[in-house]
Image (cartoon, rainbow, N blue to C red):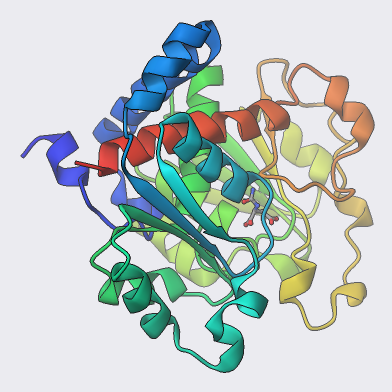
Length: 316
Ligand code: NCD
């Protein structure tokens, strides 16, 4: 079965669903979508014809800026129709006590081509996929995963380093409650020669399930609370915010010593890339934005083209 065939009409629940071969194809497609989107009005118009007549439903139970808007922009740029709810937790029948399964079965009856869903419960995307005939794209499920973020992160790393293997990757911040680092670690664990450095306070350390996966695949990782020491020899520095909304007592955690700033990144090699899934709160100093290694806004931009590529690969 060809890669394209295999990916058609699939639910996307976890970052582990993508093989290196599929990723390479997606990256190529994302490059193509970027060049047709940015070259001329004529090529933009061509793009609009691509999936005309199809519809995307975006169902968000949690706040979002980049994920929702880039998926919706992807749909619009590919000529798809769009139905969107940005606060389903409050404004859908979930507020009246409807189960997620019933909501998804209702949406199935409207025959969208794809449903992009973000939910506050870990495992919600899997649950939705079990009852859905329409492909579900997991746009983040609680403290679980964020597979399409991992795609755009990998695409960004690939665009910068021209490879996804043999990299020293520093993941920092709230590794216990952030879903982006969980998906990215699993995706990069499929490539040989990568190693991780986890930087967080003890109460925000990477969870055991991800450690077990890395150990199983023979991927080495170390842990530290020393931000500056972690920068030495890094190829990728991926920083994250404290997931306040997922913590009972967020004010008890002090991340002051975990800020990336001109001072704390002194040992970081020139070839390295600094990434962040965004939103940033104060864990990366704004002054660092001018550093050419700081690529988080380009990273966000890549999300649009990789999501166009993903939708394109999934739809028949
Ligand atoms: C992330 C998320 O929602 O998990 N945001 C995003 O999609 N870029 C990261 C976060 O909210 O901290």
